[in-house]
Amino acid sequence: MQAVRHVLFIQGGGEGTHDEWDNRLVDNLRQHLGAGYDVHYPRTPHEEEPSYEAWKPALRKAMERLPDGSVVVAHSIGATILLALLSEGRAARKLGGVLVIAAPFVGEGGWQSDQLQLPADLGSKLPRGMPVLFFYGLDDDTAPPLHADLYQRAVRQAQIQRLPGRDHQLNDDVQEVAKAIVALG
Image (spheres, rainbow, N blue to C red):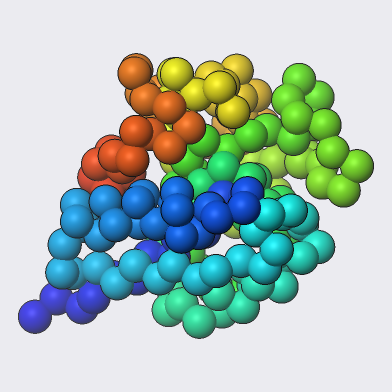
C-alpha cells in the first residue's frame, strides 16, 4: 500500500478568494490527483488585503504541519509571498517541490510594493535541490506572461509552463499542475 502524499495549497489574495475562487482550483486539483493525495487548504488571514507580515506566520505554521517531502502549490500573491518566505532560508520542512500558479513578480519590471521585494537572485536563496515549477496562463491580465519571464531570470533552475488560452485562474483547470505533482513522485 502506497503512502498518502501531502499537498499544501496556498490561496491567492482578494476578498472571497478562499471560498469563491481558489476553492475551485483546489477541487480540480483533488479531482486530478485522486485518492493517493491529501490536499490541505488552510485559510490565510486578511485575504482581502494580503501582506507578507500577516501571511508569513500562517504559511510557516501550515508548512510545519506537513511531513518532509510534501509539495506546496501556491496561487497568485500567495505564491509570491511563499517564495519570499522560502528565500529567507529557514524552511521548517524539506519540501518535495513548489508549484507556482500565476504569481505576480514583485520587483523591477513587475509589481511595485513597499512591504515586499523579491531578491534579484531569488533562485540562489531557495532551498537547494528543491524543484520549482511555474504555471502561467497566456491570457492572464493580473500576472501577465511578462511575469513568467521575470521569474525565469530570477529563478534560473525553475521550469516554466506557459498555457495558451488560460487566465489568472487557469480557467479553473490545474491538470498540468496535478501531472507535475505526480511526476515529482
